[in-house]
Image (cartoon, rainbow, N blue to C red):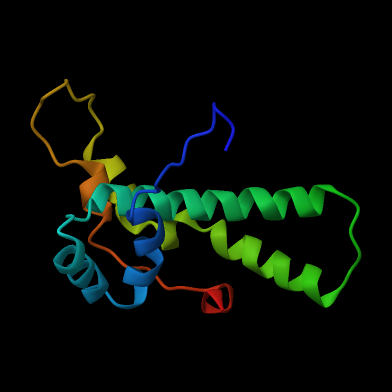
Length: 129
């Protein structure tokens, strides 16, 4: 290993968010097995990161020269799936609407990130086969 390289460990939420989409008991099992509590805000963050990275990947594909293939048709369908934030992230819209006035640091009010953690939208792109 090069002197400037470091071995890093990814936060568990990076991998747990996808598993918890279909079986939320995974989170309790993980916490019991490791003694590490799962951060619900981090679960939301990594799920959003996944959606955004999918969108970027599909946009890069379609910005470049591409053929009209079955793969391209499936990719277009998947891109349209990820470009539906009101359906994929309904509580983000509700949280945004509930915060029409600027919040002061430390002020009262619901945290929009924690509001989003309580929903589980439909999975798609072939249920991430």
